[in-house]
Image 1 (tube, rainbow, N blue to C red):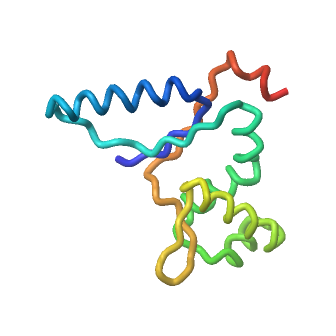
Image 2 (image 1 turned 180 degrees about the vertical axis):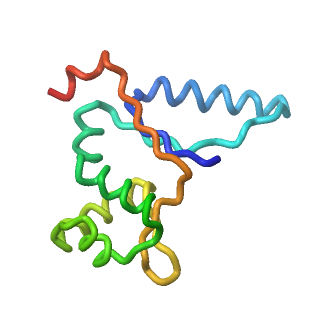
Length: 124
């Protein structure tokens, strides 16, 4: 099952994970299939980029399947240009994709957002 895991991690944590995977590859040991990781430098940035409206958009796309941006905006009861802007950001972050007919969809079986409570003070 492919997952998008979104969270707050610093460079050192990500670099350590990459080094660990590289060592396994160098030793010709099995490496499990990787999930898609999207990390932000702070909880505030994560919440800015994945606003409540963008998360609602992801949920709608996941539930409904591929939709045109126009159809998505209608189902969400939102302005087309605002939904278009949100989709552009979700596409940039790799959380949504377009199919051959231009409809947008969520390519992941699951999208998980992890925020450690110790970093919540950063979002205030």
